[in-house]
Length: 511
Image (cartoon, rainbow, N blue to C red; front, side):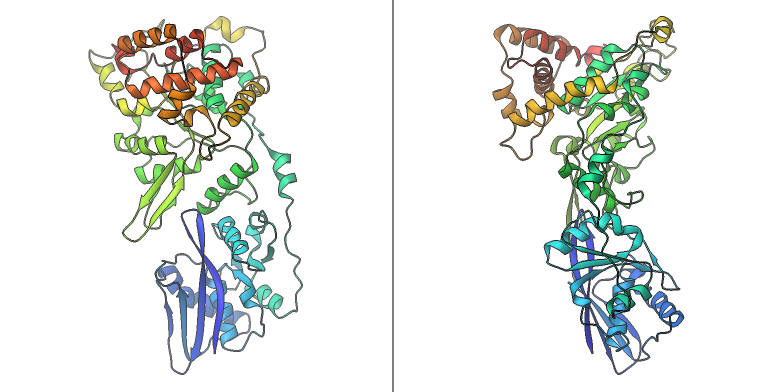
C-alpha cells in the first residue's frame, strides 16, 4: 500500500513542500531515498523504538520511504513524525483519510514525544500558500506558526496525540494568536535609554542623524569614552518595526533557530558578535547555508566593537552586503539569498594603547604604529560608513551635572518625522526606504546643492582626500540633516555638518 504525507524543507528563508511517499511491500529492510542526510537515515531507530513503546509495530517487510523532489537535500530529524505516520498508514495501523490535508513536521524522541524544530514560520507561510488545511507540529512551535492566519495550527506533544487526532479520538483546537495585538503590545521595549548618557551631545546628535537616515556609523575614541554605551542605546530611537519588517525579521530568526519562546519579534534586533567571529558566522553559509550575524541584524543594528581586532577577511566580506543589503551564498547546485538590510555601528580605539589624541593621557605607541593600526580597517570599508565620529572622554563636571539629558522618547519623534518624509519621497520605489539606500543617480537628483555648497564640498574633498563614494555619502547625510530640520533644500550648514562627520577618514585623521 502506498501512502503520502507532506513535510517541508527550508532553503534560505523560504520553504519547499516535500512529498514523503511510503510503501510497504514483500521483502526485508528499510530504505530512505530522495537525498536524505544521516539524521533522516537514522530515523528508523527512533521511529522503531517509539512505535514499540506506544504499542504499534514496525513492519517486518520491505519499507521504502521516498522524499520528493529528490534533487533537494533534506536535512535534520524534523521528518520523523511524517515518516512514522506514513509507515503506520501504509501498514494499515492508522485509519484516516486526512493525512494529505496537513503539513506534518516534528522530531521524535525514543518514547514518541516531540521536540521543537526550526524554520516553522516559512514552513507555515508555504503551507498556506499551497492550500493545505493546516500544519501539525510540536507544541513549542505552535505560537510561531500561528502568526500565519487562515491556517489550522495543530499542536501535538507526541506521536500518539497526532495519531489520536487523525483517528478522531482527540479533538485539538487550533492555536490562534492575535498577531496585531501581540505586535502592538510589545513594540520597542528597550531598557537602555539615552537619558543614561551624560555629556556626549555631539555623539548623540550623530546617532540621531544615523537613525533618521539609516546610515552606518563608526565611533573612534579612547577606552571608557562611552562608545559601547552609546551604541547599545541606538535601537531605542529607531522607528518601531512595521508588521512587514517584523515578519521578515522573525522568518530569519526562525530559520536560524534563534526565536526564544516563539511568537513574533516586535523589537529591532541588536547583534554584537565578538571579534573572534569567522567569515561564515558573520555573513552566513555552511554545508546547509544558514543566516549569519548580518542577516540576523536585518531591520536592526549590527554592532562591531573594536573593529580593527576583527580579522581582515571577515571585514572585507561585509563590503558587498553593505552596498546591496543582501547576501548571496552560492553552492554547486544551489544559490541562496539572505536579506541583510542592517545599520552598521562600529567602534574602535585610535591606536593599540587607546590614547592617541587623548586630551590628558599620553599615547605610548611608537612611530607609524597608529597608522598601521588604522590600516587594519580598509579604505573601501570606511568609505561605506557614512558617519565617522570622534568620541572624547566625558569630564568630571559633565558626569556629575544634575541637568537631565534628553531621553530616547524625546529623540525618537524627530527620527520618526524624518523617516516619514523619506517614506513619502521613496513611495514609488519598492526597495528604497531611507536616504542611506539611495543609488548614485538618485543622489544626484534629490541632493541638489548650491554653488556655495559645491565650493565648500570641493575644498573639503581635496583637503581630506575623500573618494567619489565619500562624496555621495556626504550628500546623503546632508539630505538627512535637512530632513531633520524640516527643509526641502540642503543648506550650507547641513552640508558643513555632514562634512564634519567624514573627518575621521584615514588620511585626514591620522595624517
